[in-house]
Image (cartoon, rainbow, N blue to C red; front, top):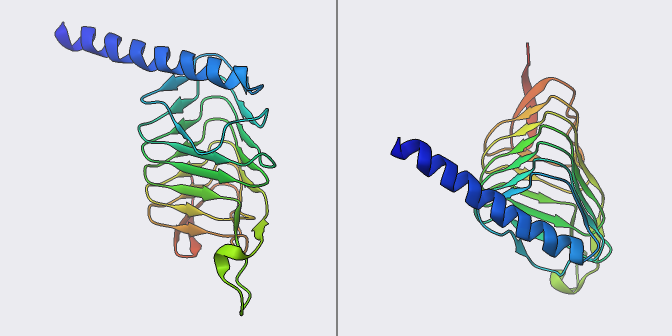
Length: 187
């Protein structure tokens, strides 16, 4: 009985935190659907400016960070789970499809610094290219998804893997490694 009461209490807290986060985002012109849940409030590195869209029944785990620049955008479709310590950084566009799950300690970045010789990297212009994660994609723990990555629907990225713009992620494929390679198909 106590277990059930605690579950109801915890679920209520996640919904309440989600409600306040939704209001905050809406006050900044962002779109947020119903049923948002937050274990803790996501860290926002930059104040949102009409550049975040979150669908219905999305869950943010503990320690999630959103670094969405004024020029960047983030789109999260319905029923997406972002687990613990997920970082999403967007200078152009990051899109996550319905029913996708991002494992703990994963990083999704659509940009990086230039790397030309003779100039400090931090002083070089950011280079960005949109990241697309399709529907029903499972990104395992501690994965890195870099600029220009395209993860087709129903794919699986195994833990500790690296996906970049040269990675070809096909529908229903299971990928692992750094950089990723297909090891088999979902049956």
